[in-house]
Length: 337
Image (tube, rainbow, N blue to C red; front, side, top):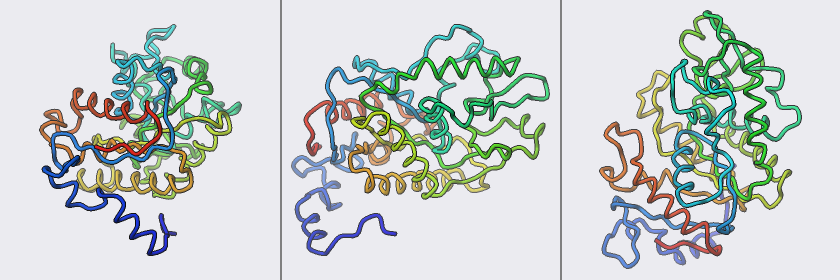
């Protein structure tokens, strides 16, 4: 079914009433108030259905871009309840047994796994409650693939205790005023036994040790919409006034299991997420779509990217979040460039 279906009069009215509906307007650097495609910082028109106060508490979840968003909001003294920087047991958050940034553990990459985590936090009987997605490796250590398989622990019970700590520590999600979700990818791995999605791919060693345990999938637009719809319904049931911000991470896939060129696979993944987001907005008009992906895509590459061409420069993320805060922490309106 179409994402939008309107009569011809409404369609032409929308074209005429919004100057930035024409490509020539946003491509012309000399035009008054132009947002200028390929300028140093592209500022798209935003349509936001709500505003946030300076004291609004937030929860940010998603791919590694979500981590950058959290830090940028933290610098602006926005109260967040999604960062866990300390654990009562230090080795719970050591990647491959080494001292590594613990927030890597909390990245959430595909929509199916994102749904499982919201269920884990908010449901009284989440699908992973019985220890699903925890696997013992060939060396005897245990990997929790609901999070990150490289953060191993010596025992199953320790993995379960870590899960309970996380669930208890971030259960304040029910009390926050807004949630930001950054969508990362449509490439996903499924556990055949439980039918649940892993957060990331299993390690090659784990896949070799358990060769019939996992299957690789590329999620469709309808798969993404279904997962996000369940998340939104869950959040609104717990807090009908919850403000939800949806965005697509501009950070490309690190690798692809499809056999395609990484650039082709990444474009397909992001396009699916973008289409799913637009379809979701038709069903949930109260959701604020913030175009992080579009800002990065249409801004000057030299200003955006680190040397690896994959990670967004920290200073550019700061500019993105300045733009977001100016828009979100204000009265509801159309935000001009």
